[in-house]
Image (cartoon, rainbow, N blue to C red; front, top):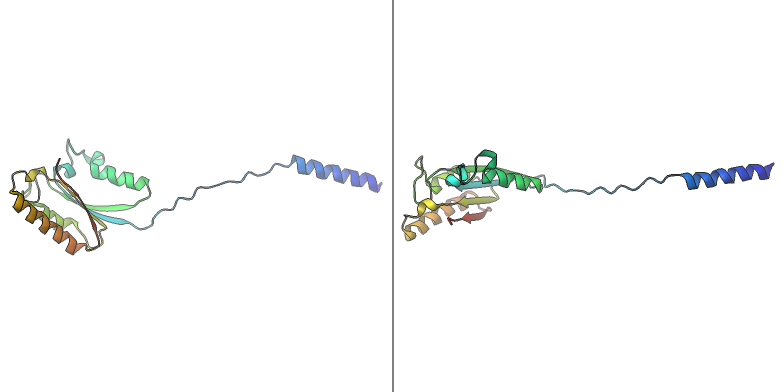
Length: 155
């Protein structure tokens, strides 16, 4: 009788081991998101305010740039100061030049300051333009000393 019990236990054990389904291991990809928010200032002309050439609303280049960064896990908050017709040496539709817009947009905790433009300065004397651009950049540097600059000029 002991042999019969041992045989049934052995058969049950073999059936249990062979019939048991193993739970597959799950490998989860870990995506590390930077919890900090990157503060950015953008100063620009009509390409930045939005329009046929720069895109409007969610189709504008700034909105699309923030969306692309968010898809990569980079959180951005931006202060955008832009005015149609404005440049470093040319006053825009509301009377501002890039230096005025810099004072509005750039904050001490900005990590990046973007200047976009401007074709509107085509009539400005090049020597005067370089002085005005330098003064604008100096204002941004004093306001946000650790920020990097991205300066995009006219085509």
